[in-house]
Every structure is written in structure tokens, then in C-alpha cells.
Length: 373
Image (cartoon, rainbow, N blue to C red):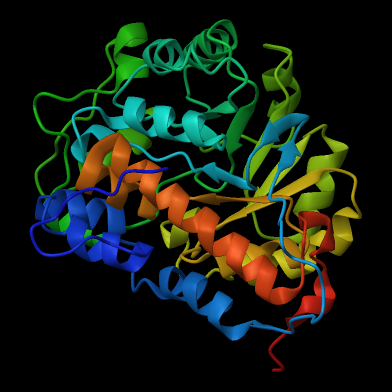
């Protein structure tokens, strides 16, 4: 049983209440960094609205006395179809940062994707999860201009026991997040890029009138990466490659052709190209194009267990969740993250039961009433 974080006023019972409570625990700069989207934040809002547009058609008179939420991704078991998305700078939310998040994920039997831009190192996160040897941990990667730096990150992740490389492909340059620019976002002096500083001394600089993160991307990440670079990346380790940030059916098909083992349908949480299609809307187009050749995951806008249900009904094998994990981390550290996961698990279980689905395999497109345009 998950312990609920204490609050003088109330205990959160859903992810929206966690977001409200987290605002009391975060600086304005950190809150804006975590919550903001690009430009007018149209895509950020539409990620959520897409789930609200899709309605459910529940089945009746089905034995749902014991719903089974277990699944597997790339052959690794999960207690429910959920992974924690890669998110940078988690120590801004809580001193334990990515370590607390990883422990909560492993103890709940869900996956975690560690960000290249983490404030806890690849090795530290892996070591603290040693008592969960079968936990699903992936490493999220950006390809840097310095290929030897990229190679070193891959080698460290492989040596530390991570199970896949999750390459973010929708950020050749950084989207313009105006709240970060206004705040001149930068890490606090006590924090650094744990995975990069140990290799090359890289860190987030602070240019007057600009986001330090924007400066870092401009200086370090390689905007010239193409499909041809995937072969080089795959040569660095035996780890399967997952491409995160696909919104087009033709790109999904090319991912299959270039050897990806899974894709994440994602618009980077609305933080890159504003006006891009909502992840859920893109999923509906991509699933038939891929035709079961690789596993498909989705992120963006998930706040309820029924959102997970809808994504699975459209053909996702699992989902990734981001910001609500940060809200739980800010409110209660590892306990807060565990409670967020538990809330989603309970809601998915209830949503499945009320929809007449005793197991994940029962979830199919017939459960959905899609919007008509």
C-alpha cells in the first residue's frame, strides 16, 4: 500500500490536485520550466484536450472481478503499461531527484527513462535500484556534436545495466519556451548535469536575457543528425533503439526500416513545435501504418487512468507520463511519486472494470467513440 504524502490542508486524490499542491513547493522559475510549453502553448493544451475529445463505449455483463494490468515492453515485464518519461533536472523538485523517481518506479513495477540532462548520474540511479534487478530502465539520449561524448554516454548506460537507448528525435534545436526565456532559466548553483560533467565538464551556462538551457542546446546538440546516423548509434552497443518524438506515419515506417525496436509517439509535451498535432491524434494515424512491426508507446497529456485506457485502445502498448511525476516528487519525494503511480494504477483498474475489460488484451478500438470533424 502506498503511503500518501501529508499536507496541512488536504491529501491529493488525483493528479490535478498534485499539480495544485506542487506549486507551493517549487520556485516560480522551476514551476515554469516544468509546466511550460513552446510559444503560445497550443500543443501543450491540445495534448490534454485530445483525450477529452475521445469518448468510451463500455461493454456490459463481463466478469471483471479480477482485472489484470500486467504487460511487457521489449520483453521486460511491467505491472501496468506505464513508464516514467525522461525529464531533466529533477533535483529542482526534490533533493533526491531522479534517484527517488527511479526507486518509486522500480518498486511499483513500472519503467523509467533517465534523461541525459539528469541531476543524478547514470551509475547512481542504477546502483540505488540494485535490489530491483528486473526493473525496466532506459537511457534517453541526445546526439551531441562531440560524438565521443555520445559514445561515452552510451557505454556508461550499457555498463550500468540500462535496457534500451531512447533517442529523442524531435529536438534538433530547442523550441522557444517563452516562460524560460523571461525567467532566464538556469540551474541553481548546487546542481549540475550529472552525466555530462563527469565526462567533459559541460554545464548549463547563463547568458543574460536568454534561457541557459537554450544556450546549451545551441552549443552542444547536433542539429545535423539524420536517419543515417542511427546505424552509427546502433553500432555502439547491443541495446535496442527506441525513437521518441514521432508524429508522422511515414516517419514511423522509416523507424521500422532503420531498425528501431519501438517508437514513442510524442510532441515533447508541447515543448518543441507549437501547433504540432496532439500525440493521441497522431497515434491514431501511426498505428495502422506500422502494422504491428514494432511496439508503439505514447506520451503527452495523460492525467487519468482512462487516458491510458484510451491510448491502449488506439493501439499503444504502453504510455509514458511526465509532469505529474514531478508534481509528486515536489510534494513528497519518492513517496509522492509512488502515490502518483498508485493513483493511475487504481484509476486504470477501475476504468477497465467499468469498460468491461478484464485484461489489457480486451482493450481494442471498439471501446472508443472518436470525434467527428
